[in-house]
Image (cartoon, rainbow, N blue to C red; front, top):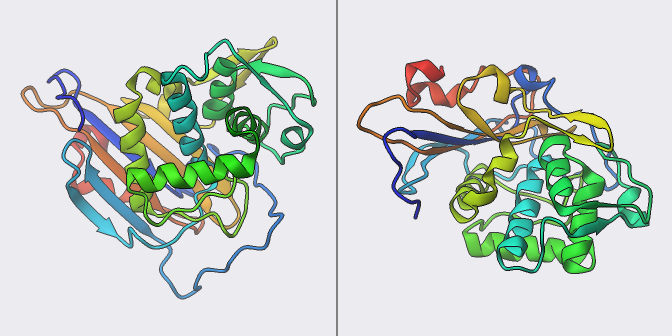
Length: 288
């Protein structure tokens, strides 16, 4: 359970998958599929959503919340969950080095672009994933923690099941296209609640707007951090099959004597979407 929120920190946490035109500038360049996608039923409506009270777990709204969808780079939230877990258990330190293997360096963009054998600190690697959505760094971190990406992906699936993500399967750490990598709106809402609940000490990484790496400033994709008051995370992503994806969260005081934390998952795979569609019925006026 979440710790009780103070009146000064009313919170809305949202995980949204697929905010297309509105967020087209947020996402990295499209990734090319190395493995053919399992084609979803073309007649099935693309929209899926769920809204959960993150304190109680109560479902406030859902629409096709358990329909299978491709998670794209929101996958990295699970990669980061396991990274934070290793930090919390002392198996990893922020000053440790993450070495880029030839396989990690060969990943498709978006990427940091380190050469094989080069390395970065764990702190830099976390920022590379949250800000840049770096696929090469996600694979390098997976190898650092589990020896191989495939082994790490098995751990991702197992931890997801333990968290209650019953309809998710991970086969890579980055979210690059693979027809076997599947999740749902409900499962990603569960994951978002879990990472805020279990690792509040590391949650601020999701609100980093940019960082300097070897003299170059790297700006993030999540423009909601600047364009909408109170948002502080979580993660953007895009592939051709999934559409534009975003995981969003926010903190804001809007009532004097009441605190509110919500988790919202949205999914849409077409090229237009109304701004933060399902939230208008439950969010305070100042968030609309």
